[in-house]
Image (cartoon, rainbow, N blue to C red; front, side):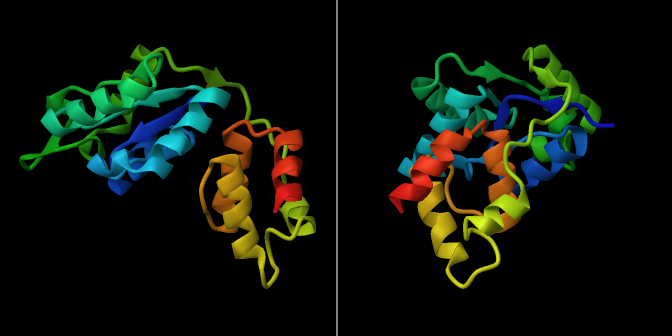
Length: 181
């Protein structure tokens, strides 16, 4: 069984998400490389950092270091996970996506990640259906608005449920955002 990581892991790209998910059970924020400078991305990381803490896991190259430094300007207390360049290189390509699950786990352990015994689920699909966020004609629009209010962004129903539970959003915060829309 995979370890459940409490903190939210910040990575550069989509392929990094796949590699991390192969190693651990965790919520992950993708910054799309230097698109990390977009306002919405920093806001999502802010919510994650406030509620759960973050671990930055970027590629072991110059661009990865620059992205890490940029994120640290906003989040100086963020934990850092590093994979060695040799662990993240495959056919001349350097990146987290090339690291083995073992290398990723080792990097997260060295970053002093918090391993959760189990994921606390404050929200269920049924509850989101009752709130009109799944299964209705306007559910997509409602999720977008509520996600914006909560600072977790837009997601499909399944991803939205995961974010609510993994970002540590309280029922009170959620219900307040729902009232506002």
